[in-house]
Image 1 (cartoon, rainbow over the protein chains, first blue to last red):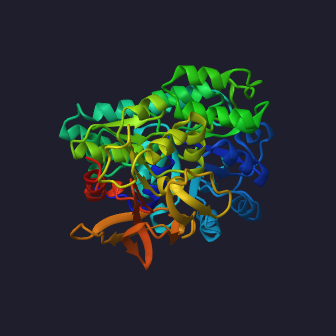
Image 2: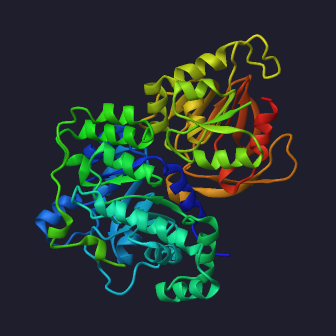
Image 3: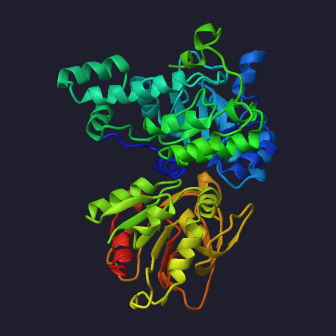
Length: 291
Length: 201
């Protein structure tokens, strides 16, 4: 039987369910997010759409800034590290953040490996585009999964794709014979007992959020209806015309996703979501990093 | 009787699973209409700032106060109240039911149990822990998790302490309100839910 190494981390992820985790780059933004009803904030150096526009290497935030954000809010504070950057993870453990996001939004540090997450007491969340990827991250010690989507685009299509792929592949496990399961485990480099557990439970053994391209309350409602357990919003809030209202509206739409009247009401007159990008025209596809 | 689980945010599904395993009919509560269908309510763990905001915005918080305060607060005499409500709050649920909350950016609470609670008193996630506790009236130890847990700093004279951990009250009851600062539901343990339901049904 596969066991989640960091069980208190998996439990914290459970407490975040049904909520919205917002990217923030300053303590002031963190306060706006908390006041709007974010269930956690994600500290990073630049929001994904700026990383995309400005280019260069995106790294973990300045520890001073992360500490300032921790001081400003009472909700959990997450922070991003580059894929495979174990030293950045150690810094975040010293800072006592609540969750580490080993994220493709930052420039990868290790072309071969992800962080060996089991050695950390701090829980990790990782992105995934399909079932094999999600299970590799879980077997490395991630205790929360989010779709990668395509960050910084304001285009929800990739988040929908990844959530549907993961769900579809989990459903397909049911039809597989023992030999096929073994082959899947081998091809995807994932422990067979983990696959068997997922096949039986018909869900990932950790909480699964969506991320990457969510820009409107309706986007959040769509993904919740598709079975997401919560939502990460990156550029979608602080790149919109009225971040306070957009933040509040996305929180409400996430909670009341099955009540179209409320989703309509909160969507009314929001004054413009972030500008969006077509995925086919992108120079950098962040989702292809660290698979 | 139908038991509701407040489903604005947090681990409400885990509570519903525990109730289903006890063969208790359970529904998710997100509105006044949902609340009117239940005789008991569980407020789950989650972020208290988020849950408090939705309690206020939807009017569900006010209605909980009205139904808790209607009639006797003695769990054994329910006849005088038109539609009384029993509530069990875990972690964030405990915070939003408390009379007084300390700690930064504290949410507005329903003030239904006479305790002072300190939010995130144990610290950040690194200080989250698992433990086994003993509860008055339940035999054996119960495995539970304290996740960024609040700490009960003061209990009023008419509040019963049902469990302590490390010399601090962790499960307390006053009238129709039961609160715990820990999570039994993530372990799937049913005994505290049974204890709650035994005073209701």
